[in-house]
Image (cartoon, rainbow, N blue to C red; front, side, top):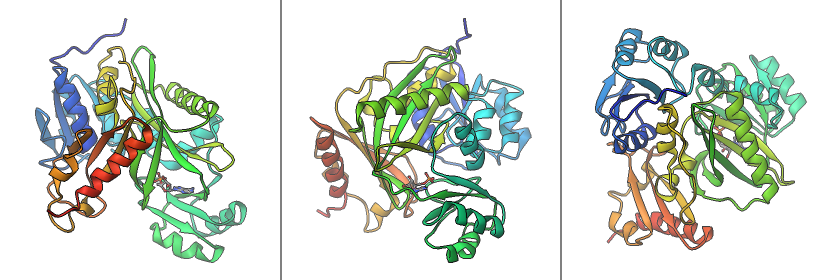
Length: 380
Ligand code: AMP
């Protein structure tokens, strides 16, 4: 029997963005208290947490104090320094564990791990200097994508190489740091699997989600992607293999490319709830956030059934460029749910919230969510 962290206990979250906010909402609904730790004040998570601690992730004294006041620690942001999670782990359990952070916060380690598990990825090579980049381009060919090994997300730290003569400019563009060169995949589509694993090794998943990106940022997700059944089964099996191999206790998202000849290639792992699983908050019996609470507390995982066809659209700060969005117009469809993250400054490209819409079919749910988002821009 694994020890259950009972309701009333305090859950610590490293990071303070929207993922922590939705985790905190799920946790508080179940009677837990939540403390968040990040370098910022008045944060999306802090606004709904019981306590918001702000200090740099390098401040190990502050982290130790934070850890002493909580019963378990999880994270909503994987780029915390490993010294921070190690410091916390000396005091309370960290779930998922530091080994998951270590692998997933560095693209080279992640891809090497994927390869070691026999999981298909885009062709890739390690690049530490311009000579290695030129040699890698000669092997992989163009077009290719150069990505920093560490601390990249939403297309940050990436440069597309269209021809070999782009090498020097791309190397400078990513800051001349350790990187991975990937073959450019002319994909038919992008999908993801959000899955959870409990302390006792139980596994749950939300099926395959179709994702549409715009400017490298997730734009729209549609639950229950229209993939051939064997590809759906393969995607879920890859997720299961990875959660088990990494010994994840918590939630992990696997992002895939679907090639034009119907193969799956893993692009990225995120060891926490993921933007492509936000629809689960409204549309599934147990959301990805509640699943994270259950897993880190040693509770059994909940059912993941999709209640109705659903789709999600992100709301970026760009929507505010002409003034306050027309919330009433977006909500005029009663099948649309509004989520805002409490961020004060709507900068372009910043994730400010999302909409979830329900339909009779997945196509109708997608059409409704896009129409509701378009309606935000209608001036009355
Ligand atoms: P990432 O930060 O690696 O998740 O990349 C963000 C998005 O950029 C992906 O979801 C794709 O839409 C695009 N992208 C990244 N890597 C590649 C690649 N090797 N080939 C084609 N598109 C890519």
